[in-house]
Image (cartoon, rainbow, N blue to C red; front, side, top):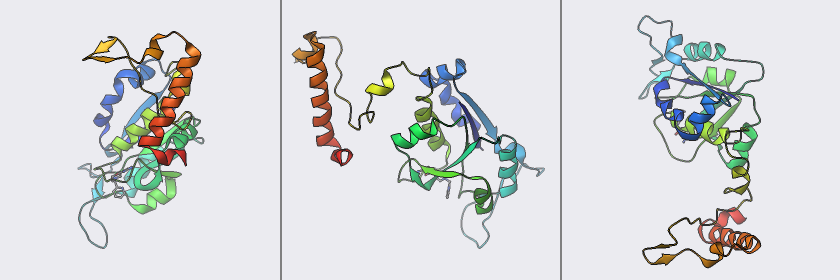
Length: 220
Ligand code: 4GX
């Protein structure tokens, strides 16, 4: 799967070279191409933003610069996603849907956002990662790349996706490892019993109990 990220701050994405996503990039299961929007400025000072028409504070990213950055990576199949609090809220269903795309172009706005005309021209879908305000779309883009990449074949161990939170619409059961006793607290006996049918049943019950208690909204 290919991700092209249009951003003014490509260095922010260095953290994707770590851990599971870093390994997926190394193994070429995913390709993350960072495109610095500033490179597409025709201005001698590499200017990418200007003051808003109509007045007001802050700066707006100029449409022509963003458009040229887009044109440098666009393909026929590509889906263009703009990260904004105005978008549809990201959930696991949306993540799974997006993982079926071959090519995602993710547009990250900074400052007061991007000129509406280029958004109208190139954006297929607006996505929000939650109802709070960040300083730019870079962190939301990383959330999208991380969550979507987990569905790409070979990125996770075969079973991990099926067992996790939301796979069955419930939260995860509690996990334990050695030592058997920690600060006087023992691991539940059933997990040491070796009876896998009983263990599975216990885990299902725990999942349901935890979901009822912590996130009853997920059961509706
Ligand atoms: N989920 N942000 C976008 C730039 C901006 C400013 C004004 C439109 C209008 C966010 C989120 C988020 C901050 C990304 C503002 N765009 N993105 N950025 N929550 O807060 O996705």
